[in-house]
Length: 425
Image 1 (cartoon, rainbow, N blue to C red):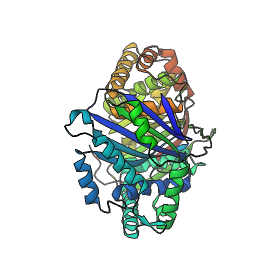
Image 2: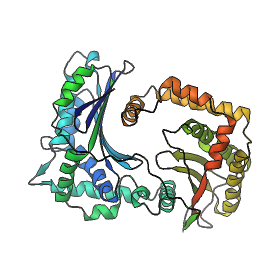
Image 3: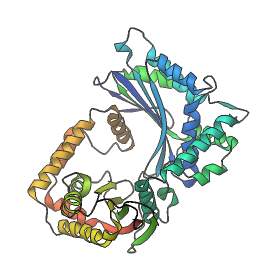
């Protein structure tokens, strides 16, 4: 159950005795736009690196060490039309220590990092700002050397051709960072603290009332929220957008994007899970067994989906000369499912693997936190353990076939490895 501490500030407590640590997530949420992504990504580094009273990384590391190895991580993610600035704290539960008050001290330190940044006269410390800005720009540039990531980004640009905020990386762009000043960043920091919707989620062996008291003391202010749908709906179009690039690589990348109508809260969501498992989500899937193993046409071949953005993708690593053959094989496997060719064994095996993966995930406090977040955002959606397992079991062959028939090819990106650059065997 979620409690509103102030207007726009929500607390959810997940009581569990599974873990000796307490995990806390503060999630700041705003509408995803091209203007905010790079700022929020840089802000994670600025707030995590130092603060007014802990001006060096060494001072922060020493403080965390004194809290019995507690950790605080700040990072950005996105879901549909929302962008998340996340602050995650993990600290050992006092119940397993002789010393008491460790959680209280950890929360005070968390508050220090969030609300007392290393900033003076309306701007972040210039030295820290320039170092972290350059670090993030270098990281973004280095990520482009990861060719699987690069191909995925280019596919996104084709699929979301008319929605730049969806096409770009969730951690921003170097060209946007280049223009930022420390004054702009501090102004945005203050805006985020005072206007973002905030979810605070605690998982561990804790008392709800104690958490209410602890977080009620933090200096959050009421905020007026403009409702934003989690879902982004891609443009309906019969055009298949294609892109290609050639580089000196030992392996080419062929990625495909399909429009997919199934949303997270729809009754077809479970059938989508099963379809993806059969088609490309597991090691026994059609793409893996038939394209990689049987035909030896791919180094890797898999599929995935994003039910908040209407996107289903196929990722492959291939020899460039086999591009047309691989496209044909992918089409052949999808058409086979559309025609109803789903075996009893692959259906059963996929369901068992999905259920096992789900049960394993329940041993992670991060999973419990994400489930609590989604329950707060979508209270009408039941993803409880028994419901999830029962609904996966209830998926029929016909339901899987309907998912396959609903996919519409929308974009293809081919990153071609140059000839003579040592193609693998």
